[in-house]
Length: 328
Image 1 (cartoon, rainbow, N blue to C red):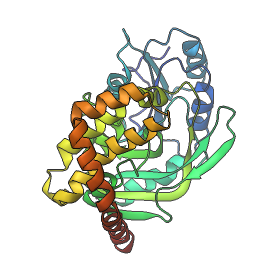
Image 2: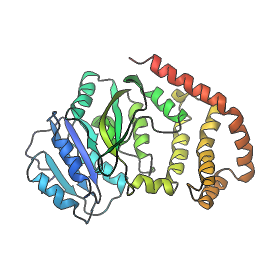
Image 3: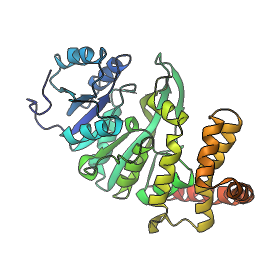
Image 4: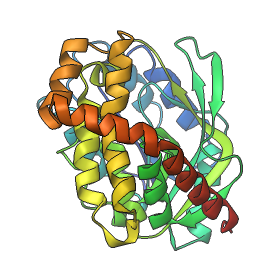
């Protein structure tokens, strides 16, 4: 096993970080997609959060064959967010590229295309690409693009658009590249599901956003994903409440009071609607709704939400047009 703090190779431009936990099923695909990259000036830092399965043996085999692979096992299980921060702390590259254990680079030039953007544009703090959704057998499910063309936009505009869309229009960690010096704060441990989106907001406050419409990474969906488990337990709802509380008051977000009410209520409306279809546990959903609004207030706000929603959708569409019109 190669010690993470005693690598014989020079300081790399990029640290490709794979935080891993019980990743034996797909870790080989992830590693091989990194080693196949045309861009060679990288270290591949793999940090194992005490998997306890066959993951370590697979990684050690690759590490013995390529000195750019640095394999580290945590002394104890840290959990997802702390392990991401451990990767960030140990990364030696100027740029950081996370790749999850389930995911892959699609093309040999995937990493190089993202690196060239940061090299050419010092004011860009976050690069993201369209991602190709794949299944457990690496079969293509669909390409998922949040924009229909490549875009460079103000970071503050993308933050505002994410809030108006009630979600992440940037992508998961496997789909982005950023500068380590701008991410020194680390991922915010107060979040459990949208911890990546909160970090993207932190980075976008420091510069511009560049979106590549070509799919460069493969995002794998399968039943064992932590994301699916978190959504079933409604962790994401608490995270969005926390995110809105932090970012809606910021002056550059510039969202009016009625729109703020609509944004905050949408998560609970969606929860109520999906619980009615038995997609969420109905008792847990009602407990969440009553805990935040109370039954009477929820009904009152539901009426307002439905009346105002056409106006809100118009505001959101106009702002999207603004982003696309001003792209450069």
